[in-house]
Structure formats: C-alpha cells, structure tokens
Length: 326
Image (cartoon, rainbow, N blue to C red; front, side):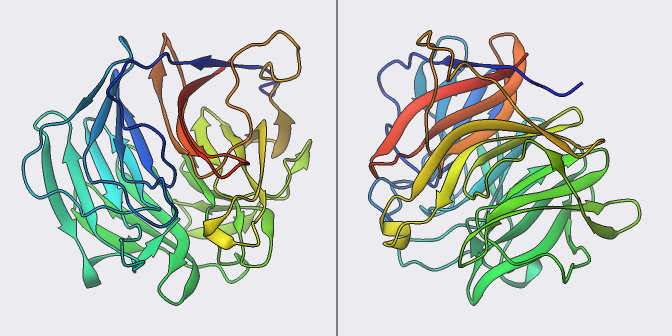
C-alpha cells in the first residue's frame, strides 16, 4: 500500500544558529544535524564552519574541529555513513567547480581530505549524493564544461572511487534527486539545461545495468533542486523548482511545496497528504528549493529533515522542518 499521509514538525530553534542560507548541505548523525556551506547572497559562500543542531533541545553550536576544513562553497553535498560524514564538490567564491572529497568524523571532529584532482569524480556542483552501508554515490551536477550524467561510487572499505557504467539515454542534469534502495541507485528528475525533467532511472548494483523506470500513478511535476530521500521501498520528494528564473541562479524561479512518494516495486507515484490543504494551520515548510535535507531520526521516528533554502521571493530561509511518514 502506498504512503498517503505525512506530518511536518517544525523545530523551535534557540539563538545562535547559522541563520538563513541556501545551496548548503546537512547530514543527521544520531541526535544531531550537521550543516555545512551555502549562501545568503547568490554565489557568495558564507563560511566553512560545521554548525551543529541538537535534535533534542533545539540548540545550535559550532563544532570544534581538527585538521584543515574545506574552503567555503555552495552547491555542495554531504551524506552520513555511521558517525562519519562525507562531503563532495561544490563551487567556490571564484565560481569554480570543485572535486574535493572530505570526511568529517563526528566523534573526533577531525576533517580529512580523502581525494581531489584525478583521484575521483570530476569537478562539479549542484550534483546529487547518496549512500548505503558500504559506498557513497555521486551523480550528475554542473561540471566545468556543462552538466553531467555520470555515476561514481566510493567504496569505504577500499578507500577508492569507481566510475560506474554510463547510460546514453540518461540526459545530463543539475539538481537531481538520488536515492539507494534494494541494491539499486535511483536518479530522479533534475534540470536538463532548457527545462525541468520528469524521468526516473535506476542502476542495478548487481547487474551493472541501467534501466529507465516507466512510472505511473499521480506523478509529480518535473522539478529540480528538491529534497529527496529513501525510506524502505519508497523514494520521497518534497518541493523544488518547477520553472527556472530568467536571472538564473541570481533569481528565484517557481517553487512548489508538494510531497510525493514513489513505490520502487510497483513504480507507482502517490501524493503524500501532509496537512497543507486541511485548513487546520499545521506547520508546513511551504514552497522552496535549494534546501539542505537529510534522512534521519527525530522526535521518535525516521523521516527527513529540511533546513532553509530559497523562497519564491528570493529570500533565503532559516527554518527547520521534519517530515514524518505515517
């Protein structure tokens, strides 16, 4: 049976947080959310601190770190595998795409540069990143010479990157969704350069083969720079940009606020009823894109944390919401 209902919870943040930003990243580890990168003014990275949000008392702190942290950047991604956060790519203050791959150990506070230059995926920003227990995956994004459609896997035990087979039918794109479930890596939507895309592709990690997923049901509108995570057999998407701004990254496009779930077994989309239309004034993040998001545990359940992003007015947001699937 498809997921049909969800509930948004809003965190009442205490003073001292990093405030509004977009094009940043967040990863939930245990009972804390770790935030890195982003911008307030378009294309201007704000800082390179690790901001820590406590999911129990809703307080902020800045992590004390060891080693050299990554330089400030926007369009960066990060995922957590156990207590370690992995951070890849982004765009620096000179608008140059990066391919630095770092780890941050939340136990010791230690930064480590794992690879750069020719050791892994080419330079990029506004790509997608996901992980399972053994590997970290990077797909697509904006490269030095245009958008990309390549998929890479970093084997944690080996400490090595592997370029996975490509797919000629999979258009290059920025701002896609990426999720791993049932030993498959799923690429969802994104921006192809002229318009938002609505296709879904999956890469089978056992057969090393790509396949386009012919989905049905109540499909989401084409979109990019949305929030995306996997829970069980479902891939859930929230929000995103459905029509880019004429000003490009300097402006705000048209954003949506809906939530959809894809059943990866039946390939059927369903709209998640999340209280937005029930008229009861429940907390809801509203339309946004370019947000930071992460799966994790909060308030006794598993779901997705969404922090900040860009709004229809082009004002950066600073609120924190958590989506529970019911």
